[in-house]
Image (cartoon, rainbow, N blue to C red; front, side, top):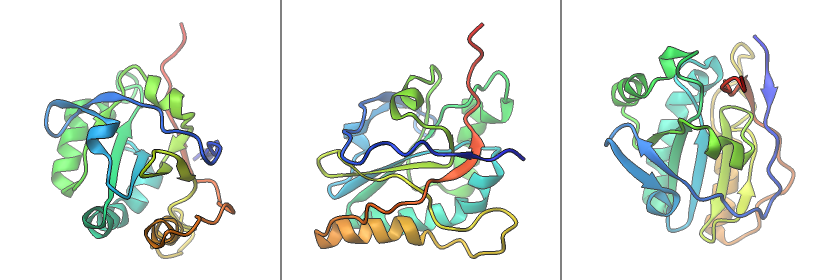
Amino acid sequence: MAVTPSTMMPLGTRAPDFELLNVLSGEPLTLQEGAGAQGTLVIFICNHCPFVRHIEDALIEFAWDYQPRGINVIAISANDAAAFPDDRPECMKDRASAKGYPFPYLYDETQAVARAYDAACTPDLFLFDSQFRCVYRGQFDDSRPGNDLPVTGQDLRRACDALFAGNPVDPDQKPSSGCNIKWKSEA
C-alpha cells in the first residue's frame, strides 16, 4: 500500500472555517460549534483506510479522555465517495454509530475544507488552541499497521497535555502518514 505523509501546516496558522454535514445528526456543524474550550482536534479520516482503522479505537479513547477536559474532536472525511463507495455519508454514519464515535463525523463533499487545511492523508491531524491557532500537526503516535508498536496516541496526548499546562507545544513534530486523500478527478 502506498503511504502518503502529511504536509505539516505551519504552526500558528489559523484554523480554516467550515460548515459541513455531520452524518450522525444530519445537521450542519461549523468549526466554532464543534470547538472545545481548551482546543480542537480536526482530523481527516475515512472508513476504509487501514491506517485510520489501526488507530480508530485509540482515537475514540482519546476523545473520551480529552473532550471532558475541553479538547473537542471533529472528524472529517473528504474522500471521493463516488469512486470509494465505502466513504459515502450513509456508510460514514453506519461506521461511526457501530464504533460509538463520541465526536461528530463530517462529510466534505466538495473537498474544499480538506484543500483549505492542505490535508494529504488519512489520518491527518490538526490540533488548534482555544484561539484556533495550529499548535500541533503530526502523527497520532509511531504505530503503523504491521510495525507491532502499540497504539497509544502519545504524540497527540503530549501536545494536548502541554496545552492544558499552559506550556508551548514542542515544535519538533513528526508528520502523520497513511492513505492519500481520494481526490475527485479534475476532468
